[in-house]
Length: 85
Image (cartoon, rainbow, N blue to C red; front, side):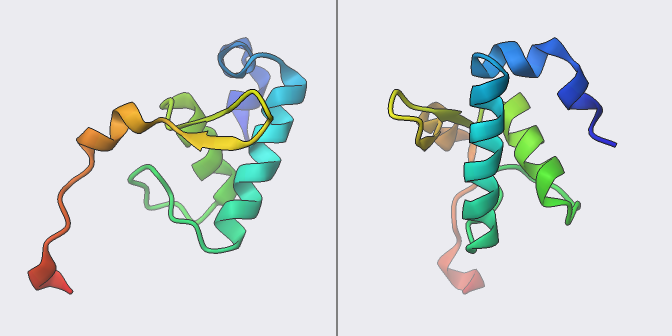
């Protein structure tokens, strides 16, 4: 189901299994509280959304184990059109 968790790539990307589980848990809380996904997806599976955000380097844990958004990718996001509101 979540084959990404079996691969060492995602574990190494975050810095270990404990950090991975912490990042997943904290990001799931954010999404459950209304945070929008940082990736384009048609999936409603929140766990898959978080895993894809990690794999695409959209989120990471800072030194105090808080979820941070990779702001380098912010320039790749589409502009918000005020006419669409």
